[in-house]
Image 1: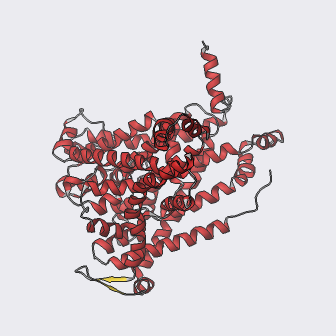
Image 2: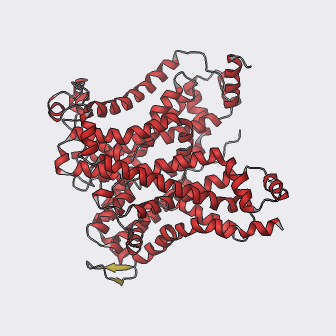
Image 3: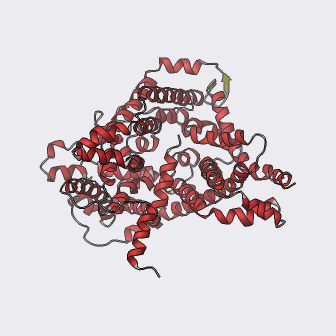
Length: 292
Length: 297
């Protein structure tokens, strides 16, 4: 009897949330697929174009370049992210004084807006008025001072650095959790056998955390390919398209050229490629589970 | 009464932590490394604060290391009043608070039947919510723009609020369903024996027990809404309606403020400080919540 009464509240409780989800998420999700099969004229009229937009992607060098830059951002950023994040997570797992303070400082940028962080770093990296170049000069490393965001060869790594600087706290926390889950007995056994901390880290901890790394790398691929705010605010895809990402190109195509169908196809293609890469990496990085 | 050592010990026991390792020389390396990381982050913030206290000519002429000559709080007043940062701040508060409240209330209602009532299709409905955690946001911005335009909600705060609330839902529902499932079954049975109907049981028995779960989803939703930039850029075009991240970006682009650095820096501090304060107060909850939130996507 109570069960029947309970069932009566199911629909009224679910309906408001489902209505919002339907209008602002599910319907747009279906509609984007429809849009990508249409050709939009300047006046906003659309005609059915089948898979023509996807055909265009294959022949468009600017999409190819943006795709390469997107992968470069993921790769360069990943190289900047994982070694220091692992080092910090390991250091924080050592039960040191001031752990709370260090965790605060490392995680603080995560709670800030990507837009404000980008704006802040745009100034920090300013060649003459910023902080980075004068800091290098004062340490007699003036030859390292560069026009970071203005140099096509350096802009992408510079943006990747800011992306990593903002987000590293999350990865440190996830990796710390990995370090804390390691079985204490195994590490103790290693210590009794005379292994130093470095040896323990390299030969015991890292192999045992293989699964954690696999998940985090896949997650990084998915997230870093969507870094819109950083690129848009710091470089707008420039100089000379050297930092243009698929997301910025898609935004520009939609709102600066009004080519909505093509922009939608770019986004869908990126998501498909991204998922394929994520699945592939997941497969490649899979090792036999360690027995312990 | 517990003595202070007992309290401390029980704290350690609750956190399940071993006491700190005795100091070893190797720890010096760790302190140096973490200290360098901390110093570089702190100096970045300190630099922004320092510049926000300078004058424009001081900023241009003096070395970046030079400490500002005086505390020029008028930069903040200037940013707040003349550069519209106060307006953006008001918009941000209105949009983030409304969207957060709407998203949390709707997800509490939606999570209850999904967690505690057996009905046909409950698995499917939950899967639909979780789909929102898996689909990257960037695919939907064009149809979202068109849909809001069809509804006449483009370039309105109410449109932005509805979109933010919707994009908070999947994570909120995910967390709250998990949380509600940990509550004992007997709660509803006891309430039913006492003659309470399902709605009454939900309001008087279940909701009061949601404290920690509710606090987590509220803080995480608020931070995400406060910091959101991309949808604001796509959906808001009038200067009067911009939120802080978008407004500051636009301020950095505008010609008259492109050279008025100190005002822009004061605006950045105004945006950063409330969030850092919130983080300082609720460090553990926010760290855990945002880390769980990052696992989506």
